[in-house]
Image (cartoon, rainbow, N blue to C red):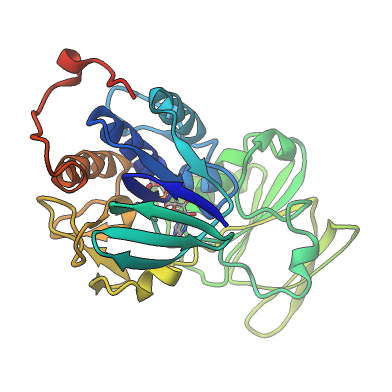
Length: 335
Ligand code: FAD
């Protein structure tokens, strides 16, 4: 079993977990980040790496993956220890130290824990189609890394929310044709974008609404046809090169629910002034936490990372006084 000793264990390498390394590092606090995915970046990298974000202060526009790369660069001075492909499973408290076990038998000892777990160790909600796993990552994708793959192709997109609608609009610019499938007549996405989607029917987009997915056929992981059926069970076969189901994320906190921390609607309740959960020395920041007025935004998570880092100082360095300093005065803290 691999053993790691650190000051703060950060669960989750989404934008908020990554920025915590910086905030803690500036206060001279060591940290270790663990993520169940095989790459850093949380939702930004896993769900929408190519999408432009417009509400990161000082960046009029930045692609989600680029933001993750910049955060990764920003934390390099602190020589971050980042463990990927491992889910944090169990925590034990021994006096004032947490002993934490991951799914891959790493044992981490930490004085405090920052839970920056977003919606949990997430995965996409998959459509209930037999054998779909044979096509995954070949011709069926739940997120898009490189949109050039879809140039001049026939694409089926399923879902009724923002991701499905946004990607249909985006990919219609390069695809040969988009088939947009949804089981209800009404879409849940932003009304402005739904309007844009309907407009695209004059060009290269066909709405297949209200239809349900029925089955998938193809060879060696390459899809050939997708069958859909209407509410009267009338079936229709669509010839496609790629199928992109966007049914959201499973919102399961997994093992975190067993850590005796107070939850509110499956999210961790924190004190806004400190970001402390109901359990001593465990903080929750980013999408995983809630308090009155909480906004699930990256910039809100960054601020929570700073709040939690300053608050945990007294627990990590009980014999030292914390003097608040601007980064312009302090520069980058030496490790
Ligand atoms: P996440 O990014 O969710 O990362 C959490 C990480 O924790 C994941 O990698 C997960 O694998 C890991 N994890 C969870 N549990 C465990 C465990 N037990 N062990 C190990 N690892 C674990 N926000 C904006 O501010 N502006 C936007 O324009 C914007 N656009 C968006 C567009 C889309 C399509 C989506 C889906 C979201 C958008 N958001 C936007 C929201 C933004 O992405 C989230 O607010 C942000 O990612 C939250 O960051 P986080 O670090 O808290 O969590």
